[in-house]
Length: 570
Ligand code: PLP
Image 1 (tube, protein in one colour):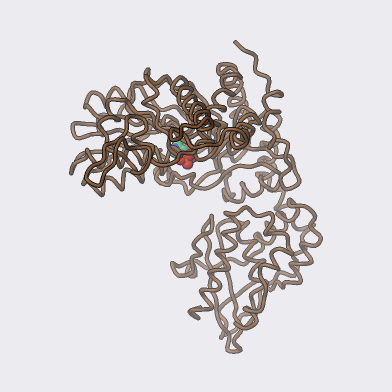
Image 2 (cartoon, rainbow, N blue to C red):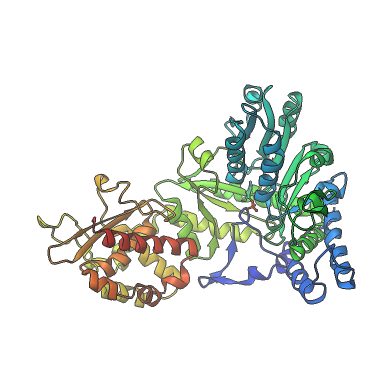
């Protein structure tokens, strides 16, 4: 077996040398997207510098060069997943579009009322919503496969769900939350018994295990380039040629036609029938480069390293007191989903981010799975072959610090927040709020050097923030657009001044609320209009450091304040 050197491998990813929030980046969000090696980055820019032309269309040399590289990538993908012919490889913009293509082309033309589409409880929204839409359009029904204790699709119950009415069974090869390989061969066998087609969502599997579509004998297999060190905006739909040939086009336009007249149009051969318009030529060619890159590393050696890393990370995470995995037992790929008892998932992710560790928290585009497992969300660490053991150690150390509630014990000694107190409530003012001023906040943040200190101040504010009563947490007070649940209520005094109070189940959002409310409380509408919130946030250094999604949370709070003032229903 070829040797795998983690040092050499890592060096090929320039982004891994970055500092994030002043700390070396530890990128543990690979299930969302992987980083790109230099050869893929250079491939894209090289294409634009030396080969850019539209494919299949012109008779000039540059177009021929681009077309050769573009079709060479198709050959590589065909070989990579062991398809029968390159006509079975359709370019899309990602797994999501591949599934939509099958749902709208095959599904819409084939499904009849009461036909059944079988999914599983662990699907990504990309493998649920397209089927719901086509079910609505055709009168077909959706049925759902249950999971076993270990989080894989339960083979004992396959035939309780798959039956005579089943037309297609669509499931993830590996769930993006659970990280276990589903019993794919068995599911395909049962689907075939009932002449149902199978679609496998390989978005998570493609970077971590060998995929052989002929051996699987599935009808469709989908994946995205960006999860396997390739570019964003390119994906693959593999489909058996005989089935693809029967399917009508998905989108119409140039390239997917043979002849067009106003009376009649005839469609192109596979795979072009499904590739309307100018494709992502640079991206497709760069996907070819990412496959070449993977092959050069030696698949077996790379997977063997990942396996060691997976086992090590699982053992280390298991040693964290109060860490609860979303399902019991070891995942098959290095994707670990868990919560820390007593801590909001969003707070855990924000704390890790403050020391440079990128993870994801929330529902991971798998809301039905969260409901099935009766959790509101989880934190996910997803590793790749460029991650190393030291990074795992550092993350685990940070999680241990979090569970030991270092923030809780330190805050009495170092907090600047002694000015936090309840303002006296009076008969006219039912809102009890923190009496924190803009000057207090500015002073606090002026002392905080670096993002981790700012994050710490936000968390301390969040901890001291006066909570809303259950009665105040209503549909009307909810702030939509925040990553966690958040609420805002307000009251206008007879003097015309507004008093706000907010709450969230995440400490970090409570801290942000405290900062915003310090700026907006006790102001009239005119004073609020004159106050430059953007300037305030940027002086605090929050705009630069908060991720767009959390930034949106911040924006969502501001929007809610504006709404409350405008409607004066506070
Ligand atoms: N399916 C699974 C299992 C995924 O994890 C993802 C993305 O995270 C998708 C589908 C959608 O992939 P894309 O956004 O690349 O279309």
